[in-house]
Image (cartoon, rainbow, N blue to C red):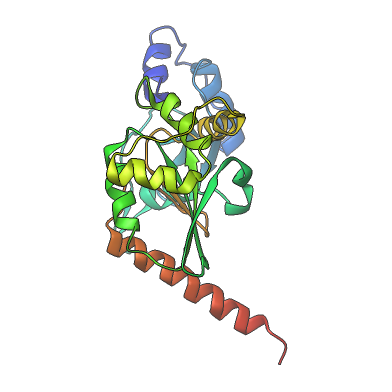
Length: 250
């Protein structure tokens, strides 16, 4: 259940007269937890807009004041910079460090020299995943860490297990997603890696497929236009090369 729904449910029985103890983030968090004991409130911080505090819970962002007299749901835009503050902050919260991914639970698809890396969580019944997989056929010099993430249909797990138990997982996946060729694996090998991927995704609130994670930790829910994807991974490679050059001994 989304945080807003929990807030609404709690509002029927909560005592709204509880005063904030002090004008700081800890007091705001304490006040919200007293008023909405069932709602997940992960973090609260003061932001430089009016007297607003940012509330993060269940992967969602809300705003309140120092006395928690209201909850504001929506987008905050900086008028001076025209920046969507809420969107930028949401991207920050969704960041997943590439080195923290359970890469042993993924299989690799390598094209060219494999120098550019990306992780993808995908369901074998996902239409957008199939379209994106076809687009990826034209991308070179890339290593894709593919995480089987069967969440969409009753037979998604069976298909995922068949892919994982195939002699060539990457080829079995590509053939299934781009040519509708059923995987030849029997699904009876050790498939604990799939459960591990599901547990990781649940922890990181990955709720849709495909979900793309780049080397810089940026997470994109949904398929990207392939030109935008190429631009992103090329930019990361350029940034990495520039960083390496600047730190190299002279």
